[in-house]
Amino acid sequence: MTDGAGRGVRRTGEDRVVTVPNALSVFRILLVPVFLILLVQGQDLLALATLAFSGVTDLLDGWIARRFDQMTKLGRQLDPAADRLYILAALVGLAARGLIPWWLLIVVFARDLLLVGLAVVLHRSGTGVLPVIRVGKWGTALLFIGLPVLMLGQAFPAVAMIATPLGWVSAIAGATLYWWAGILYLLQTVRISGDARSKQRERAGSGGSPSTGRLDSDATSDTLDGEEVDGG
Image 1 (cartoon, helix red, strand yellow):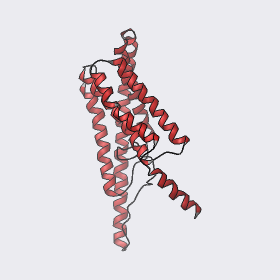
Image 2: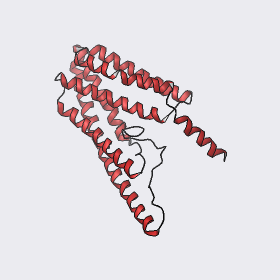
Image 3: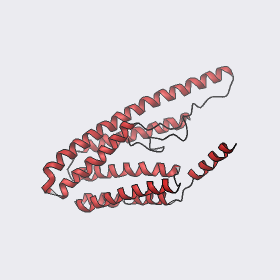
Image 4: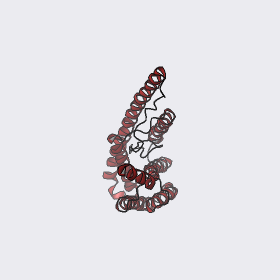
């Protein structure tokens, strides 16, 4: 009884919207267009400073959330959304300046669209959200390293001979892992949705109420509709 009550209190706390970490996450998202404008204008040093400041606020909001028990469902959605927006902004800005090919932007963006579609499928089937796949987190991390390193090469030509190849290796590896995770999510969605439909048919045939086949609603999500579109 006490445990049940405790869980109820925790869920209520996680439903909060107005918290310091959430405010910091929203601030990070508001800085995305600033970052993009600076990057398109060729202000690479200022763009990198904006990105670094965003990273500091990301670490800060995570620490505050854990230290003061302010972890919320909204916060777990805002953080990965901000990460993806910065990745897409960096790709758009670099592609607009001809520093990377547009196909790299299309590859990464298409994978995120895939996850949005999978989130819709899971929502309609009532099966909850997908758990995080570690390979997706590695893909996101490599993109987060590779793209700023490419920007670093533009901001400081003296290190371009080292930064540019390292940035490209990291970015390509990140995009590859990004899609690898996307394929794994697709396979998981097909399996989970199929299991849910089978259980519904079994319930219907036995005269019972249909089963939703839901995943744990508190599970970490790797989709844009859930907690963390992964890190990939």
